[in-house]
Image (tube, rainbow, N blue to C red; front, side, top):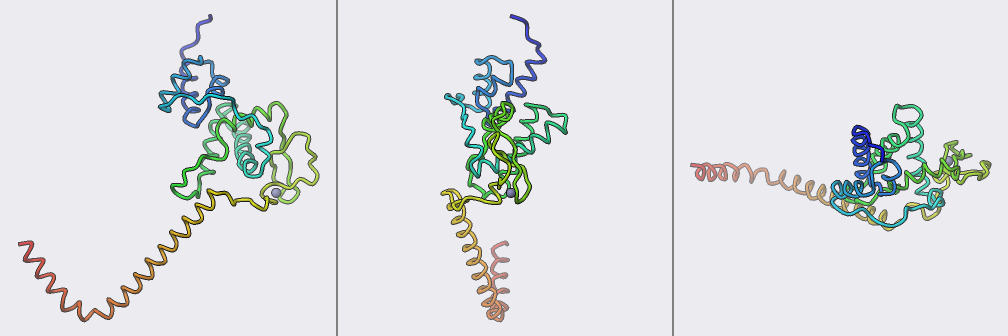
Amino acid sequence: MALKSVAQEAKDIELATQMIELGARLQVLQAETSLSYDRLARLYREVRGCSPPKGMLPFSVDWFTTWLPNIHSTMFYSVYRYMDTLTPARKVQALVESYKIYLEQACAGRVEGAGEEPVLSFTRAWMLLRFFESGMLQLSTCEQCSGQFIAHAHDPDTGFICAICKPPPRAGKTRASKKARTKIAAKSAAVTKAIRSLKAKKSTTREDSSVDRVTKPMKRQAKDKKDV
Ligand SMILES: [Zn+2]
């Protein structure tokens, strides 16, 4: 067995750690680094505090063309292409950097405490790049907004309308979004109630100001006595 460079191993460990933090599965780490399965499994346990999940990778190509995953993966892929072609970050490094940006964007404006997983997982993002490499997916141009969106390879470009311009009728009506909406409604109701009671208080204090003028000095005197 050829001796491995220590510097290369250090780089691999650094890269694997970043990928584990972003949620990569063991198969992805094995494909992208030259570290052994045992070392990667150990590193995974050290970083995540639990054993790596077993089982096959999610390998459905169709998933990327369903409406919400399509929007998320298209956003990620656009960032990736920019990173891979126009910045020093290449291939796997571009994947890591663009996935970090995707996470920032995907979590922006989310209801605090909603805490659900991002639509596009790191492992799926990695699979997406493999599907593009093997020519199973392509970018099609939307006829309405002229944005480029992920579609099946060899799908005719004419008449293509993206998932944003033409969302399905049930779009956005998931159980999680319903929960979030009720949460927001409850919060705003509480705020209006608080404002109303504050207003009511203000008007009563204005009426009671004459009473206050008498009682306040009395209260202060009582407090001064206590302080002594
Ligand atoms: Zn469109």
